[in-house]
Amino acid sequence: MNNLMLHQAGWFGAPEIVLIVLAIILLFGGKKIPELMRGIGKGVKEFKEGVSENPDQKPAEENDDSKKK
Image (cartoon, rainbow, N blue to C red; front, side):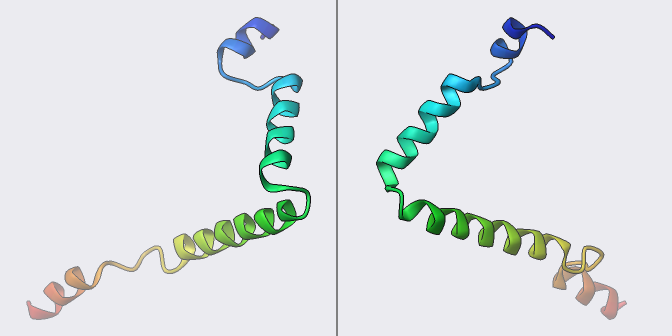
């Protein structure tokens, strides 16, 4: 793929990434960024744990119906 196709597909280049990082630093400050990243990491971890918990388990309503029969 050439560079033009990647740009049209919505990929970020180096200048865009630098601008985004600078904007984040200006908005949150250098001391808040690690705290922000830590919170995002905890959220992702909790989400993955919630998704992986008993994937075969059916909702309670479906389990109750099967017991009545």
